[in-house]
Image 1 (spheres, rainbow, N blue to C red):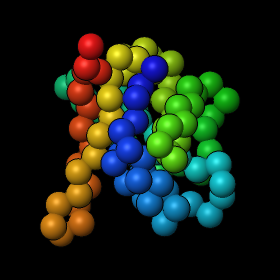
Image 2: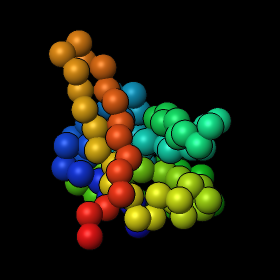
Image 3: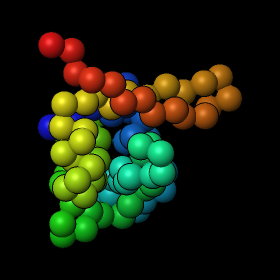
Length: 93
């Protein structure tokens, strides 16, 4: 299952709390062109999405995305201007 770092958990929780007024919100990861991923904020998961809750954050993915990210780690960086960059890496052995 996708692992969420503590830092990513803080960033995701902050983004979601600013954008969603429900307690069911989370970050949605979807496939994008060229073997990339895109993220959006969602009020709640769909019935078919896999939900990962770690480090105080909720992440929603459809089954194919969850399968690709099964052995990955989600991290986040915030630059000096406040821009967020999400990073996906292979879990350490």
